View 1 (cartoon, rainbow, N blue to C red):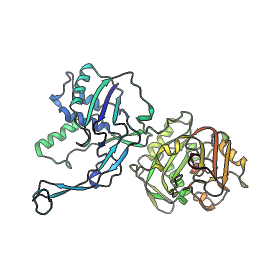
View 2 (view 1 turned 90 degrees about the vertical axis):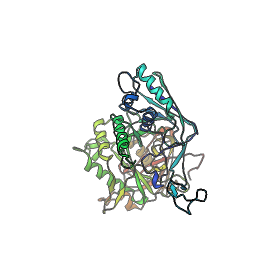
View 3 (view 1 turned 120 degrees about the vertical axis):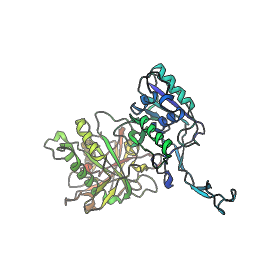
View 4 (view 1 turned 45 degrees about the vertical axis):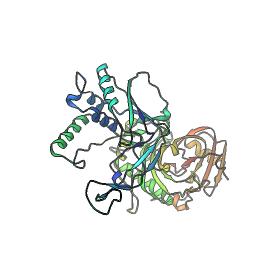
Length: 465
């Protein structure tokens, strides 16, 4: 392994993740520091071509062609948007700067400063390097002064360590089904930077005209549980650009399923379309909508959606579904309304760890719909859990009204998806299990459309009524 240890000397980090810092509207800075930025810093530290120190070739190209590394960094640093300010520019103009007469004032939008609790970041590459490669890369690393903006000074050291071990609690791991977008390097990056430098040297090209190559990879957040291989898991998360009324839950879930069926390449499998002939295939894909619920100020609005895929299915079919939905930029509802999808939007409601962590106590944030007509009793709740692949609860509550702040209170007509007219009994439910259950937990007959979605709750913070 090739391990880079980065110490943030000021304890903070400031970098622009996607080129939007000049707009002054960023709420989050780049975190974790991207591998693409690490490569750029190593290039800037000592140049390219004849400046490279490997006797057999270019040590930078070796790193650029490597797979994205595992990044060990604080899972939840503090992001502080910085205030705009005017500074003295190079142009001359009177009456603008009191401290610098005859100088023009220039508006600066500095972006976001990130303050991690642990000011250390580690990049772990699964590649083999020779002694010469190691010496050349270490020499460059020693010359790197800062990472990101100039007010983020760093010290970088490099080591070869085949026995490296670290806690999963800090590991940002490359994962095609992850939820965090990270800028990474790719084969040919060194040549592209060289071409941009040549153009700037010859023509004085501005930054806006220069080549801008942005290879991106999906990473799994450290707080996202490692999925059990035999259990189902959420394969894709879709944050909405703007929240949607919670009463639209069934409509949004139906639209998401229709989009999945229309975009899927080939014939959709039974677990996706839901038309099954055998009772053994009872676990179907679940199209979940994610309401803001559980906090004292929660309003029940939907901030995103997700697709849960059952375990034990063909992995190629699951990846086909992910490939079909990943490029989707909007969701078309019945009636013609569109919901824009914004994968850069980060709110607690759409973070995987909000719904997937393990807990013994779960409460519905969307009501669970009964699989039978008649009164909802203990037998119904136990049956719902069994149908969802869950153990029997040791304690439960049944309520016509939501049990958590922000829980969505639906009208009977809002518990059925478009095109269906039959209403069934429904209720909000609180569950306590004898063991911790890994989420997401969804119960009831309409769980394929997200109704019956549960959130974990802490009884020390709030008891159920």
